[in-house]
Image (cartoon, rainbow over all chains, first blue to last red; front, side):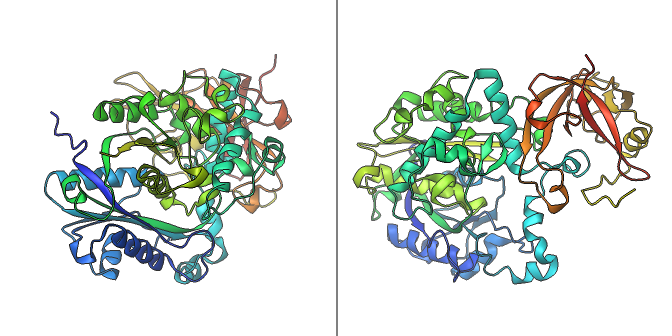
Length: 398
Length: 137
């Protein structure tokens, strides 16, 4: 059974909040600011929106987040919920918006995600309950009886994959570092990126060891901020202010939750999400002009180059060596905004910038050295949890 | 025994048999009586066929390091005195994986594929935590 919405749904508007260090806005203000900018971008009003999707924030006291947000911005949606599958969530929300639009359950869906995990503005109530333990609360991951007693961290999940990849395929520490160097190079060209100073492989390798083989510069940064997307039918989007960015294909696969139960740490189910997306779009990796891989840690772009078929399994480390092939002007520029490594990583929302960047690239709005020349089709990927949830989205212009 | 500040497993109705055996320094895994699969960590039903007809079997305690990482920045203050320490996924001879620490070896000497054997650390009067050390060669 196929009722594909390929090329029939579009991202019509995008908006980003203030990013980086934002000590004067709580998460709801960041959501509202991004939403206002996204609506202005496409020329729609809040009253035109009848679908609202949010991720919610790290504040676990808030229930029904999408409803609170809709109230805050004067929207009375037909279709609304909050979704949470980690760094795979934003693409899953775009897929859900497309489904709702395609079957007539919504006309205009506003997706918004923002948080304040650097400044923790507005977290007073939560902190009054859990006190100084907030960082400890969010770094506690894993099975309480069979993982936590051994002291793992979220980072260690990705370190386990990196170690295994080094063992099986001869991937080197320098190759891992190159991923961070190339991504930082892109961030250095982005006026809004949080970390813009160029890095060398030596810099990355000599930054603080966090969880061998991952050093600090191979990990996500911590930020405040967020963004919003306006999704509607391609037909309606063509009448709005900006060039529509069409959803060409999408795919998703969720595996296990715990890292103990990962089938294969070096061959992820991103390959399955990718196959679905390529098939729906009728395109392949050679057709992609960029790949906004979810880059929470430097090992993931190496895995994704393989799993999304830009190179053979095991060749990802060699593919990134020297950086030329993955940088702007190269074979497949990755993470052109600087990603979780250097642009903005407010936790759950961070994957939304991989989409806003893809949209800007496809509209040709980036300009300057960071603009991928003649970008017409691009891949965005999401990854949540412990290699748990994989999502893929292919975007393109008419 | 000094006060143990790291996360302590709290046995529940599903896992109390596992922890009681661990206290006797025996490593138990679950085996499905219907589909025959081995399962770790334990839960109330088989993750492959959903059968609740599970039995506990004693594992040999021998395995190999599937992968490892050396934690320099621990998740909480209670692990700081141990850092750097090794967190590994150990593949048991029975085909299941466990997360654990590799002890009695310098972290930078641990290798993927290294044969290891279970050893129990008595961390409280009731809880013994399975860890792994290099297998005697």
